Structure formats: C-alpha cells, structure tokens
Length: 138
Image (cartoon, rainbow, N blue to C red; front, side):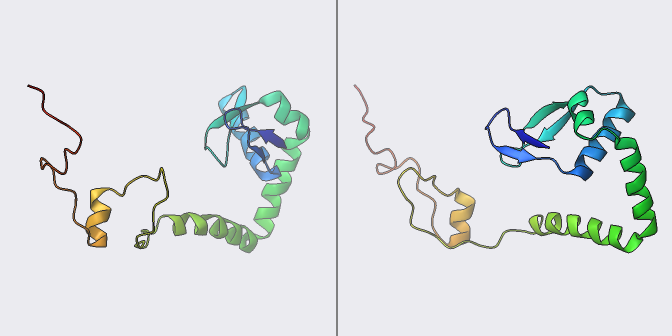
C-alpha cells in the first residue's frame, strides 16, 4: 500500500505483513484507523480501517496462513526476527568519536562536552573577548 506522509509529503509504503499486523491490532482494540509512521520524519499518518481492508480483503485467512507457515517453518521465523532486531542492536551501540571537520557557513557549533573529547578548550566567559561587541552604556 503506497502512502504519502501528511507532514513532510514523503512517499512510503506499507508491506503485507505490516498490514496484517495493523488489521489484527485494529480489530483487537476496535480502532477506526492505523497510525503509519513516516520513515523520514517519524510522524504518524492515519490510515482508515476501511482503506486497509480494501487493500487486503481476506486478511483473516491471510493471517491464518501466515501463522500456519510460521508454525511449519520455525527456523525461517527465527531468522526473520533476528534480522529485524539486528539493525536495532547496531543503532544502540555508542557512536564512534568523530574527528573535527571544517564547518560550513550556518553549521552548528559543537557542544562543550564534544570539545572536551576532541581536546579543545571551551570559550572563556565574562572576558572582554567573550563579550565582543557589547558596550556598556553610561
């Protein structure tokens, strides 16, 4: 099912397994819509239950077939679940130290913690150089 994010207008799609899970969840919770999350901005775009049922009319039979297939082939189901959890485990690892890059115009300054990691000194406060351009009025 092809969708377009209501916020950033990015086109994305929902696969068959996600539609089956969504329909099962909507049926169990008696919901009228499913929140499809945009891969770019991570905001939820509501998809009506009727629209989901139109794209997968015999979803109950398809869900039963999927459950039977998973029961018949448990190794494939375990491989799928470990493959889905592996990218998540990689993103949870701490980031590597990044060397200083030349900044372009409009780039944000690194925070004081990252300056300390890179061996730089934080800017001095309450010094004439720090209050550059500010003049006291009499």
